[in-house]
Image (cartoon, rainbow, N blue to C red; front, side, top):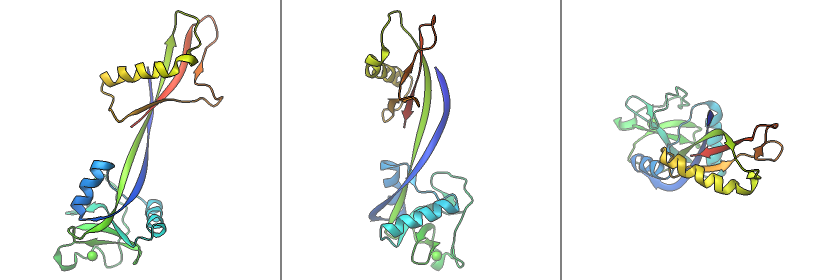
Length: 194
Ligand SMILES: [Ca+2]
């Protein structure tokens, strides 16, 4: 089996239920991946737009101190603090907020109950498989059976139970390709999504 390069895509969801930063973190880790990380201007703009479209003024993200770091261990150095922020107002502002009203990041008390942004990391891995058959069968008829067996085998090797395994359709619309005779090998691909 050939392991192809993996790709990671991130999505961010807004949770409207108000929670303290710590409770928000627990919620995100339970139902998503972590509190959201904002790593560049494009993401910052996208998330501000998400709040705007959702009619939500502000929301917690994963940034906290001391010193400032992201809850998902991201090493991102991007920041978009307001000019007077982070000001640690009153000496107890240890969690970061994306604030649409003032168009900035602000440090606020972690015990404040606020809406929050959860990030979900989706990891995609593409596997290329060579199959050999002693019989002259059209494997297309058995693709779901083969996929089930493959999933069982990969589970035994440590595949996570929330991983979805699917065949990858080739640009020509086919899943399986038969190479030129005399080889009986079928070359195909499937992908796993965690
Ligand atoms: Ca502040």
